[in-house]
Length: 507
RNA sequence: GGCGCGUUGGUCAAGGGGUUAAGACGCCUCCCUUUCACGGAGGAAUCACGGGUUCGAAUCCCGUACGUGCUACCA
Image (cartoon, rainbow, N blue to C red; front, side, top):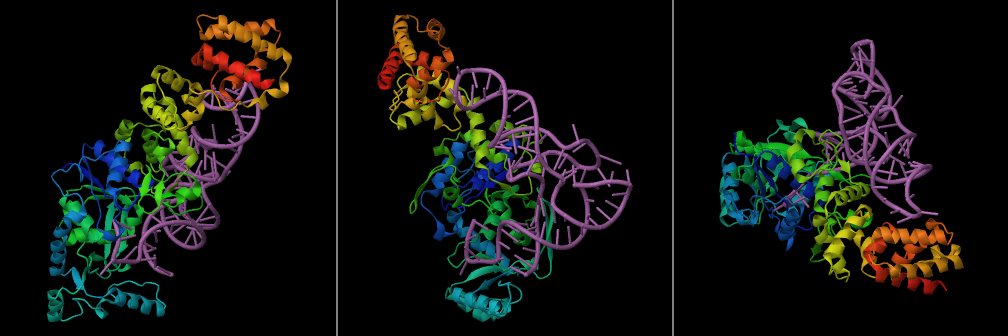
């Protein structure tokens, strides 16, 4: 058996959307599971939609996710070039080959002529406004024109396309690894353009030629490609490459959380969560945030994406990339779409933050603090803080809210939660606490707690009633980990300072 | 309109002829913690509908409905 080779073939037209990352991920998992190659191919045949920087961005996203390609435009293998625009000159010959064998033809219709065909069909009440076997003889193409005329037009380089001549009344079937046997009638699809007037191939031609040339063995793509699959299958056959045709797998769609329909790039801002892996800086529309910037760990991101359409049949939901490679199987990919649930996505991240060790978390957390102008000069302290608060951080950015008070005294103290039950006894307690704490030498967490409780007992006050005020003094509000943990990390001086400060506010 | 694909709780889903129809997210109650979080213990779904097949169907078949995708010189 030949080596497994799969490819992720995005168009560099903008940000990389969730579904794209999942397709890339499934490709990657399948390749690694079978000791195969994961190829990145840039499908930039539509020059009008090309967006500067999109290719690099896609590669950056894959790298962030940890699913880099084995071959691609920036790490070429034996099958380059990996950008279809750079392969431009190879497609024409293949298309001509099809014309010669009678499976394709030249079409000289102008866009206006095609438009009028559509208008005519619509006027006749037909819903099927396709360029196909029913009307191709009425159009200007090498099937309807005399040979000399066709040659003359070609000679003067009259703008033309090459279309596949879809056979009439044939059924095409193929096996889909996810959906089983698929059978479709050729009548349903139009004479797809193979070569465009600008000399570029369309997806239909390019995907077949390139998959063949790049020796792709398995083709994963979205479900939206299913209707045009007969064109591709036929092309493989017409080229005489049928025995090397890749195994197909049409992936289910990722749907909008509300209503239905596939999740689109626009849904992000509308529903309040990102659809891109990483921030995309659109040349025209500006910056659109991604999961990375929101505070997602790549491990969590690919984990949640993988589970949107696949599971291993057990109750396990948290998988590392390595585990997914080991357990992945196409048979367990669903055939129906799944609505994206941002709440569940956050849960995945929370789980990953909880299970990640300090070393893993430190760089990201440090970066977030520094971006918010909180200098970290004591990594040891930072590590302790991370360990202490990670279970209450769903997103990486939560470390800021949950941990900034360790470095900066709270700018605002929410005294309102304490004031209603405040009295002179409590005030006196804290005055004495300051004195007692200033006498402690070790500043050990046990000493801090014991001193606090002994003093409370002496004052005939319940420790519990004093802990909330203490907390507010230290962090500014009703949040954070255990108070004594906080005090211990804050240090003696700072703790006393904060008690004094709040006490002065309470007068 | 045509063609394709799909349909188990609000969401993700296991289960593929005989089960009390798993589990997770979210929600609610309680315990722990006199903050929150973590961690525990509970609560709420008869499988879109209608026909078959069968002793027996969420599971197989056929319809219907609904959803969704495609129907570009976009991918």
